[in-house]
Amino acid sequence: MIVEAKGLKKRYNSVWALDGLDLAIADGEIYGLLGPNGSGKTTTILILLGLTEPTAGEVRVCGYDPVRQPLAVKRLVGYMPEKVGFYEELSAYENLRFITRLNGIPEAEANRRIGEALEHVGLKDVAQRPVATFSHGMRQRLGLADVLVKKPKLAILDEPTSGIDPEGAAQILDLIRRLRDEAGMTVLLSSHLLHQVQRICDRVGILHRGHLVAEGRVAELTAPGGYVARIGQASPILRARLEAADWTHSVEEMQPQELQVTLTEGGRAELLRFVAEEGGVILELRPKQPTLEEIYLRYFQG
Figure 1 (tube, rainbow, N blue to C red):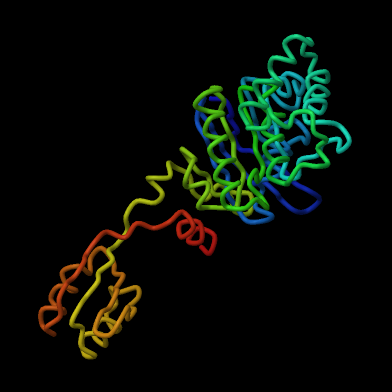
Figure 2: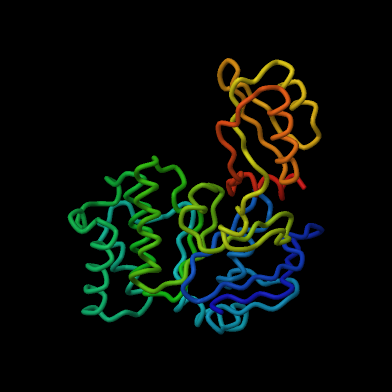
């Protein structure tokens, strides 16, 4: 495991930011860490980076203890904060060269890595432009290049698509997938944009009040639950019966005499009976595939 945390706790005065967190991230996966503000996401990242100490519990990152061996962790982990900061008057190349000097990378190797990273994120043609002239999306891509030049085993990305238009966000997500597929990195992605997490993450953990309330592969968390039916020739009586049934979640009129009904697993036979008795027609009946957002809200509200 690249990341292993057991019984992780963190208290700020009388507030528990983390309260017994167990977390395991495997080599080569993209792991999405989800949760509302105050759930413990930022505290978890700070502990993994060795920037704050846990109150209790154990944690290992790439085999090292971030508290006792922070420099070893920093050599193997790349971090992209939500608000990426660069020296505005310096070019993209100069900013990355500064990073390689801080990490003790020899000049010849640094030049090679910088060229590869800028090409990887699509900024090679603007390498000599001052960062002050960059758009927000270009700065985010430069932030990914910043991670790449270190060639880390683990990349921690905090809200990497925040404030970017849909097309730019899609490009960033494709770059993140390539970090794993082509550069062989493990990625921890912290985000509140659930549809994006659902698109690229292998596994997801949902944090709430310092607890991991749900975890699993996206396909497992979004497994079908209940059914969606589209009904034609629906009379007012049929609609009333469906709305009164305890096995229906919702009944919506899509157009005159056509209803869309969401129902529980056990309500399928009753639905067929109601429709037959009232002269309706089943136009469609399929398993309901919840979105990650629905799963998230269910755990959060619970």
